[in-house]
Image 1 (cartoon, rainbow, N blue to C red):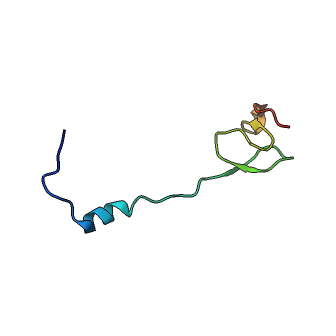
Image 2 (image 1 turned 90 degrees about the vertical axis):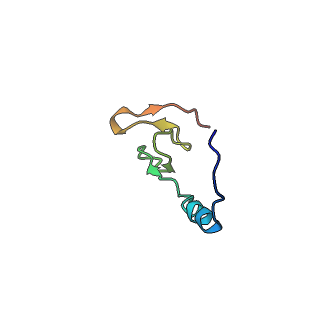
Amino acid sequence: MAVPKRRMSRSNTRHRRSQWKASAPSLVVCVNPACRAKHLPHTACPSCGQYGPKGDRRQVVETN
C-alpha cells in the first residue's frame, strides 16, 4: 500500500478540496402533454408515471 513520503501542506489540501462542488441536477420536461412536469432524465415521471420518447411512451409506474 502506498504511503505518502511527506505531509501535504494546508494550501495544497484546500486547493484540491476546492474542486469538490455540488452541482444542480439536470432536469427534463415530461413528454406527456397533459403533465409537462420536470424530472430526472432516463427515469419515469413521478407525477404521471410515463417513460420514453414521444413515439414510444409507456406507463411504467402506477399513480394514484
